[in-house]
Length: 337
Image 1 (cartoon, one colour):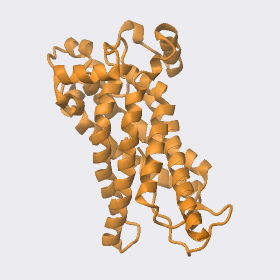
Image 2 (cartoon, rainbow, N blue to C red):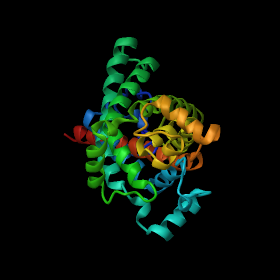
Image 3 (cartoon, rainbow, N blue to C red):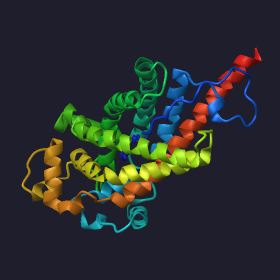
Image 4 (cartoon, rainbow, N blue to C red):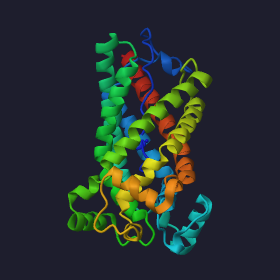
């Protein structure tokens, strides 16, 4: 999925598909047929639909933990919003602020995640195929995968970044915004349209290494536990969880800076004599260090890893299932005539 959202982080960035399976001889699929025996090129619509469902599932199922992560990354938290663990935070939020409070802002996340992930997967698959045909004449090019993933991340984050800004402001303790629409109107009126993209460069700086670490780890895990690259839900879940955990932990400092740029914590900024709005990744890094030292860069790392492991596992398993199911369904319809 924060794609990734991942595909992130939280609004962590979303995972993309692995190398394309080898082409198989035409013929009707049989029960129990593995993923590799399906046609190598799923349609654009299939990638978009599978990606949209995977993105929405990834971001919504683990949304309460994402809310905790945002609060735990606060550099100057209110005394009533200081937590020692994810479980303690969820329990305290529900008891003191209401049962539905951890889900505040989930609607804007769902609105952003669907189209963002659909565009991501569609762009990734199209560019990967085009570039691979050019570079290796139809083979699987790692260079093509990297370029395609980078361009797809640009599109994904362009759609998802405004939703991340609104979501994180809604998640903060004592958020002054009564609704998503009220938050959008207030931010637009007081800070201008640019506020919705203040953390965009930081988001990209985080998501590109996140995706690199994530893909390397996922492919390595698949080689270990699913070398034949069959459609194997268990292998997708385990590989996705491990990949998400490693990538999330490694990119936590960037996620902390992104959260600060999105939320513009008044207490934190005023304590270091910053007036107005904080902007720019370099300024965010400097401010985080001033407020919390090196440890400040890893605030909320526990919540980020706990969030990213299942969310990445969900994204991979849902995407692979729908890609497998939709492609197989189309093949069955084609061979029934």
